[in-house]
Length: 236
Image (cartoon, rainbow, N blue to C red):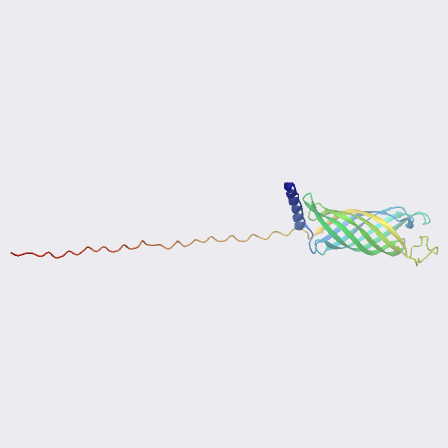
């Protein structure tokens, strides 16, 4: 059991380290294009629509991103609208909170999104606020698949087709509509390449150590021959 816990902890630590190494940084720019499917609110009296758009984002750090998006879509009218189609243009500014996670050797992002902007529909422009989430699935550090699901909340004080109040024209009650938008596209992340590692420090120059001091053996004491007593000669 302890071995399994250590293995799980090692895997989690490796994922965290990979995320820290490859997450976005200050100044990284996201440039993207996408296709869009819109599930229209019943109050619009249109069918569902398809369109396309683009986005531009700037990362403040590895988690927070400021993003602007524009999209345009076309919808087939339903009664009481005249026969034909209506177009919608949406332009929003939003802030994204990125939760990076590692998978398959790459760092990906779970995105929480919210913002405000405007929506122009059938010749009138109203306040809108998108809220939702998405995924940024990286193919490399520079290219990613971006998937988003948003609920576009729209105030429609000028919508003539809403059933309340019955007077056609400005709707002082500010009727609301909510539309579901599904987006899929590609993003290019500029400035997200990893910084090259710093050069290794120079190898220390080997220094030759001074030889140990030479020690001479002690000088042996001088040997002095004993003096011989003078011999006395006996005369007879």
